[in-house]
Structure formats: structure tokens, C-alpha cells
Length: 218
Image (tube, rainbow, N blue to C red; front, top):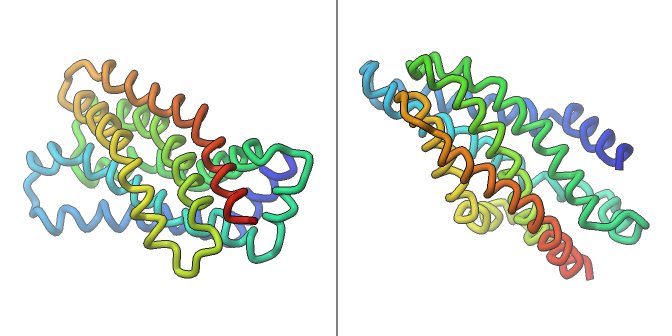
């Protein structure tokens, strides 16, 4: 499992597909929003939590089509399916590698980008907490979508259509946690709901991903 995680991390850093592309997309979305809504600091402060969460979600989505496609092309996916390591564990490791190379950099960069959107001071810590709680769920759900569409030519659009509805609860409670934190309200309820969603996804979704991948590899 450590060797698989190390291999996926090295491939992600060498290709630059997850780490650099996700951060660049997140930055572009955040920079373009003030141009579209105008230099109204009060309006930017109100929409900042939602915009930052939506940008993080789309940045995670951007790299999902590469999550299993490269392994299918070089044949390593067949080796993983027939190895002694359970496929559920292998896909969990791949989801972890995706989060480390895509989700974690977004969590660390979010406070810096919050400055561009005039995010209120109390909101920074809750923005980081909400992204740290929610982005692992995005990677695990994305792995399920990648397992469903692996082997389909130009399956990126289909993957997005399948995964985006499953992302909605995470987006709602993640943005609500950051919004309540920024406005001085108690964000504990949406934060607990967000943590519950992530734990539920991590405990169930790898089995669904493994089942979908076994069907596609037959």
C-alpha cells in the first residue's frame, strides 16, 4: 500500500496534472469573480465562502479523468485487480493520493485566495476546516466516478455528470460552514454534518468503486 501511494504521488508530481492544474484553476476562478461582480467589497465578502468552495470543487473535478485512465493505458490497473491487495484498499489509496496532490494544496491555498474576495477575518479558520473536512469526500466520490467511466473514450464529461450530483451535499454543508464562520454564527452543526458525510463516503464508497471497476475490467 505504501509503494502504491508513493508511486501515485510521484506520477502526480511528475505529470503536474493534479497539483499544478488544480491550483491554477482555483486561482483563475477566484481572480475572475471580482471582475464579474464588480469591486463591491460587501458583496464579495458575502459570496466569498460559496465561491471558494465552488472553485475548490471544480478544481478537484478537473483532475478526476486522469485518476484511473493512465493506469488502464499502461496495464497496471489489471495488475492491481489481480494482486493480493484488495481492490477496495487500492482504490482508497488512489483516492488518498488524489487528495494529497489536489485537495490538500487547495486547503492550504484557500486562505490566500480568500484575501482576493475580501473574506471576513473570522471566516479564514472555518474555511480551512470546512475544506479539510470536505475535500477528502470529493476525492473518494471522484474515484467512484472514475471507476464507472474508465475505458470510455472521452468519458470526462460523463464523469462530471455522474459525480456532480453526489458532490452537492458536501458543497452545501462545506459552504454553509465557512459562511456561518465568516458571519460570526455558530458553524458547528453544518461542520458536523460535513464530517458525517465524509466519514460515510469513506466507509461505503470504496466498495462501490471496486464493484464498478470489476465490471468494467471484465
